[in-house]
Amino acid sequence: MCTDKPAPQREIQITDDGSATLYLPQLDEHYHSVKGAITESRHIYRDCGYLFRASQSPGPVTILEIGLGTGMNAAVTAMAANDPSPVRYIALELYPLSLEEVDSMQLDRFVDPRLLRDLHQCPWDEPRQLTPAFTLEKRRCDFTQCDLPSGIDVVYFDAFAPEKQPEMWSPELFRRIFHAMNPGGVLTTYCAKGSIRRILSAIGFSVERLPGPPGGKREIIRAIRKINPI
Image (tube, rainbow, N blue to C red; front, side, top):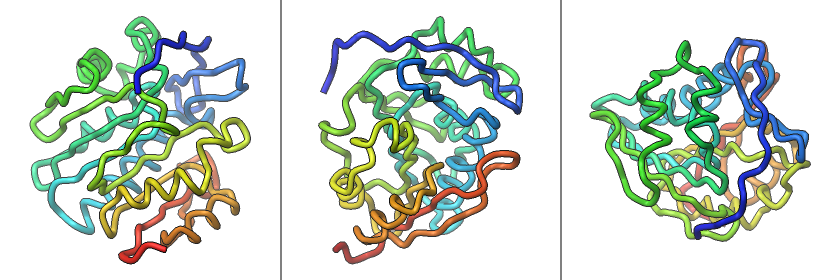
């Protein structure tokens, strides 16, 4: 579902590991952890999501990201994607960044700058192979209303915090994700709230708390889709 809504006001801020994130004044919320944006992307999503799944079940991996945002989660995954486990990456984003915003973040020290620009420049709703082992499909849509793809192996759940966007963390939406995932599929998120853990468990995920990124949050969540849904 496309939208013509104007993009929200966004401000660039530097996080503790030297990488930039974006701040939304109207929500008083950041796109990434202020303790380290690139550290968060690498640890929570690349390492605990994609690389974990690839180590458990080598072969092609389909990743669904809820919120493309700055593109850092996608970029670090593309840089890690390999022949035994090539990635099909589907990203849902309602308010995409402009190239001017991407360039202003100066992420050259942390991710391949050409890859990051290609990621933001490639057309919507059309798969594009950005590296030999990484194909991206961006969908400009509202996650709460759009259809989800099936056969998902990994979900990067990177929505804004539950207290900022509670509609993004409802049992109904997590149930939709559950049914879109393959058995054994992995969902990772920075949010380790007890209420979110209980929702995921009730739906049929096996939920574990993992150590958070170095210097960042104490715990994160990784949830595994059980074979038999509830």
